[in-house]
Length: 353
Image 1 (cartoon, rainbow, N blue to C red):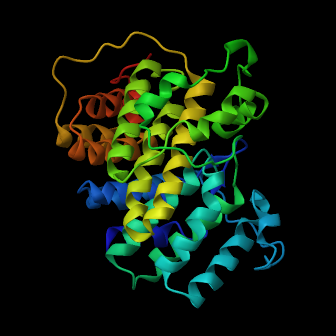
Image 2 (image 1 turned 135 degrees about the horizontal axis):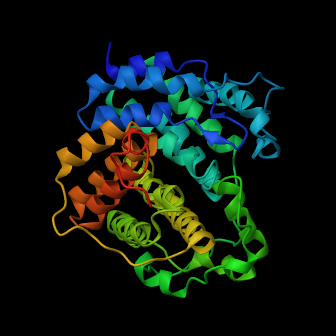
Image 3 (image 1 turned 90 degrees about the vertical axis):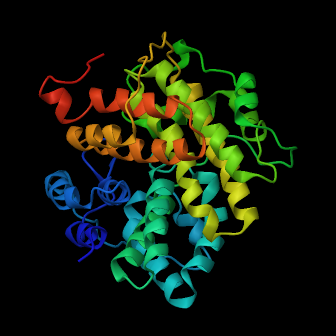
């Protein structure tokens, strides 16, 4: 059995979140990332360790009506109802058609589960595109979309037609939420960014940046901009800033399977989500990048050794971006994170800071 299919089988029956603070189930995403980095042999053991912390999938509440599905958006207790709903959608049409129909509907809530609805959907899309006959991969795409819908979280601001503008330019017009307005101890990322609902300057952010004809260039610019901000904020905000890179990079995995219009719309909301995390969590410090950075294989080794789900996913996403845009920030970020989290930190061999 393929490592991805085995991982999905092992994770069957697990819910999309666990614990008291809405921690997302990273199992399927990290397993797929490990396999993509050429570490399929590590997948089974990693999943076996990881799944011990997960909760069971919640029971169904009531069926979701195809005419009134909007009322069920953002209701986490309906996630199994959403899975049942998307199962019917996939029975009625090819998966790419369903994806192209639902990504624009869900894009305004791209912050769902701290962007994990998008990210989980994207890893499932890439996996299913390789083998669309594998039932477990189809079920995982359903789970990703269901989680996105159940955790749907719109941000302030209304999409309007605007000329193309890169995120690296738009970020200069982003107003950072003053520290005294922020809850110093938010329970999770999505509750932190929800504070922007009461910060009027953020409403204009959605229209500060937009892709032109080159979506890939827009995503490269966004991920690089945020990878550099990760380095400036590593430490207390490391995990938050990871998602400012992994979320827009995840859209790169979806884009080939949807229309250009769908991908461009989703890219604008991916920019908004990354900007939201930055506006709410910016605590910059001086950056000290090693004179010599490790190569991709060394970074993968470090992520695997850490065992940390964020380090694994961040490393895979950064290396994917580095292959298209070889900036050292895409190497320095994973190097930092793998040293801060996971096994290396527990054993005292990594960097604490």
